[in-house]
Structure formats: structure tokens, C-alpha cells
Image (cartoon, rainbow, N blue to C red; front, side, top):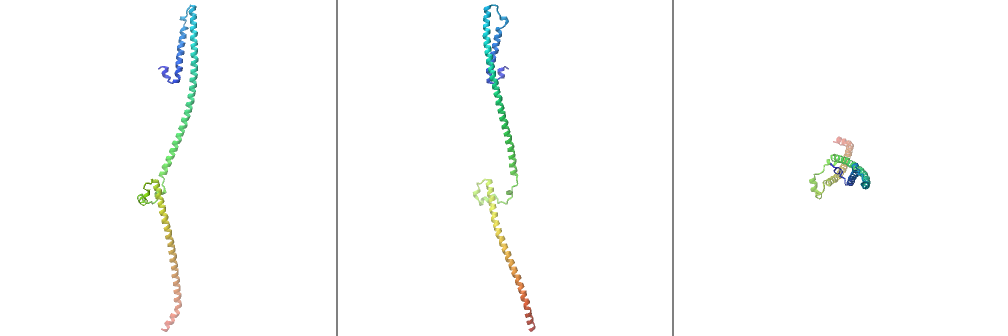
Length: 213
């Protein structure tokens, strides 16, 4: 596997090309400096020196370019690390927020289950059947279940208030009848006493009549 296959980042491709060019330039310079290629001819030596100098300038330029690209790559790596750290912090924050939402959802689910399982008092109210209620109040046929239950409870409340008023009226009548009966009993008792007194007062007269006859 070649290095170009290992490094797939597009921003590093110029660095690889410059590095390859620098390597090739080094090889070319080394071939010029090969001791076996050294000639004893002064003219040839002069041309060789010029060629070596030219190749060195090209090499130095490539090395400078390579250092600049390397510096830029380091800056990009630093920026990438910073961006990665910020993204990781954001992911951690979102993960923590997700966990909080999960725990809140779990808590709310538990509360909903507790409310649904709670033994509400209204469930034990002796309400009239739904069918009978709808027959009396057909305007509630399209009402949802919650509003229908409220209407039935309100109806039961109104009915109980009416019955309570009737009970109070009957209780008043009962108290009045009890008071009237008591008064009559008292009147009868008083009449009995008066009758006994009349009988006692009439006994001497009765004795006189008995003597005469």
C-alpha cells in the first residue's frame, strides 16, 4: 500500500506531491555528486558545479515550500483538534441533555401510571349509565370521554343538590309534624287532667244524688 493510499485527506495531497518532488530532486542531486561521475576536465567540472548549484537552489526552494506546507498542515491539525474538542463538548452536552430528558420522561411516565392507577373517588360515584345520560342529554353525544365524565358528574351533583333540598324540606315538615303531635299530646294530657279534676269535683254531687235515690 502506497502512502497516497494511506493518506486520503485532500489538504495533505499537495504536501505529498511536494515531498515526492523533493525526494526526486535529492536523488537527482545525489546522482550529480556521485564520485564516479567526477571528471578531470575543468570545463566539465565547471558545468557540473553550475548544475549542482542549480539543483541545490531547486532543492532549497522545494524544502522551503515543504516546510510551509508542513506548517500549514500543523495549523490545520490544530484547528481540527480544536473543532473536534468543541464538537465533543457539544456532543457531551447533548448527551447529558438527552439523559436528563430520558430521566424526566421516565419520571413523567411513572407519574402518569400512578395517576391512571389511582383509585379516584369519582370512579365509585353511583352515576347513571352513559346510555341513559345521553338519552336525557343528546347534546353530549359528540363530547369526548373526559368532558362527558365531567358532564355526568355535574349532573349527579345537581341531582344530589335537588334531593338534598327535598330532604331538607321533608325534614322541616317532619319537625313541624313532631312539634304538632307533641302539642296535641300536651293538649290531651292537659284535657285529661282537667277531666280528672272535674270528676273529682263532681264526686260530692254524685254522692248527694246517690243518697236521695
